[in-house]
Image (cartoon, rainbow, N blue to C red; front, top):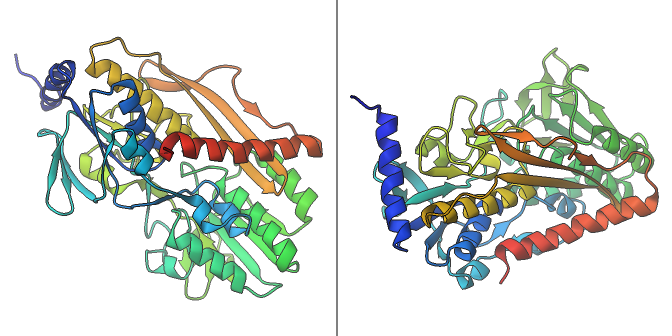
Length: 419
């Protein structure tokens, strides 16, 4: 009887790891020190202290995309977004600051940029997103130096803030928003809200134009209500049906062109392009034609390469959005599932949750939440669990939601990177 290459690879990856895990010597390597990867590393050590856990992350500090919009508005300092890795080291995680460049699944080997290799019994990838350069004609990595995406917290975020500060009062801030899926579905609309807050205080004659490749977006009715209440007519949203889909970018001229030939120019141009799973996911062979990594709902194991698990924004996880909350929750569940597997215990029930908080303005918060479970290898919504902030809530309710969002950020930072 013949066996396929995939069947052989699955057996090669699973059997030795189980044997070593029962002996206490299993090694789990995690790539990516953000919300998903750092959580998985910490909780693997918590759930199975005898495991060796190595976290591979090139940056010595992680700056979060969540709450980076607060920085753009001047509501937070840059250092408030920074998280280090000493807390993970104290928890027993070996942290290696290096770039992962290749994966050999058959040999269970991860190659680093310095030429060294790490052997693993299980590999967890949480590499975030990369931009799909030139998916919009004219928008490549060089163009991002003039028209930043600021969709990875770092130099791009700081560049966009400098541009907003330098813009003359009365100018137009143009934002290009992609179709789903992409990192943080409500993120562009929170950014528009908080840039509007900044303009209202410092550049009140300015305008914001949102060019969207979609007809709907997360918490749409809540955002539209908040914009009207706080900013009047400062923010204009143009949907797909209204010719909001941008197909061409001229970064030098700060101009974009839509499907039907309309041209829009701004004094500041923020282009959020289509995205895909981070580079190392492609090298590992876990990415399909969508550009994302399809996973099994029970433990986020790759559907394409056994023994590799993909978390967070890089994963194609059905109804779960690409958010920091979701990545953290997935990291805990995958850690629990791997700890059980490598110790020969039954797997835990695969139930996940997500909450996305957004700040429309200081003291004005909104949120949406959902619960998901694995069903025949897929993730599905748990009926009657979606929760969203009510329309027409009073000021006290909105203020409480704003406080809840800030408390969530403080708590999740301590949970993942704290001592």
